[in-house]
Image (tube, rainbow, N blue to C red; front, side, top):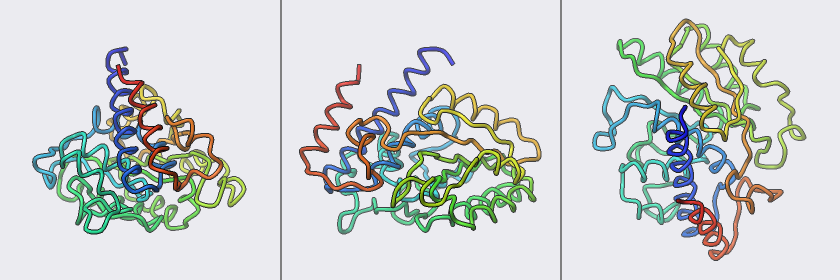
Length: 276
């Protein structure tokens, strides 16, 4: 990847993070840590990998994204707003009464959201069904699936992985966000998942591990998934929970945070200052 393209992707990830701060400061609280950690992969997906049309969100030939860790909805919403799926000003309505931007992703509410998620583990099964459905329809579309490492505690994730491998769903790309934390603390203390990459390989996935906050590394890994073949793909993304906002990165409990509006504003201004 050349330096110009890398800078473009880093800038879009920064804009996504700025959009998230817009959402959180309007509500005062939210799932900030795990939303910030996936901003980089969302930048790479929407800018280099996915086929989509903001003017026609239901376009059948589009690539699909399933954010199984549905609490990262704020990252998805900021991305979609920046791409023109709905007015940017709507970000201020996050999780408000009557909003189209609920706490967790809802395909019936938000233009551009391909699948309702939030009950952890279920998104993996849904993505597998979508990938199989696309194949049966004869489409060359791909399904991208974001799963959290804490979510990998769920047995349903691994049942779905067995299915994906058995059905040779090479149009499925599982993006595992390994940020080391979940709701109640560190994953290694709550239920140590050990080597998730080795597990995915054992389940039959073509698997690589990368720095999940490095847009160039993510792009290279995602480019590999265009090759097809007879295996589903997995990219283990080693990320920092709260990436991009030091005040969130360094917080012990940053899964969901409640801070004064002034603090969200200050964090947003820190991000804005990084724009060229």
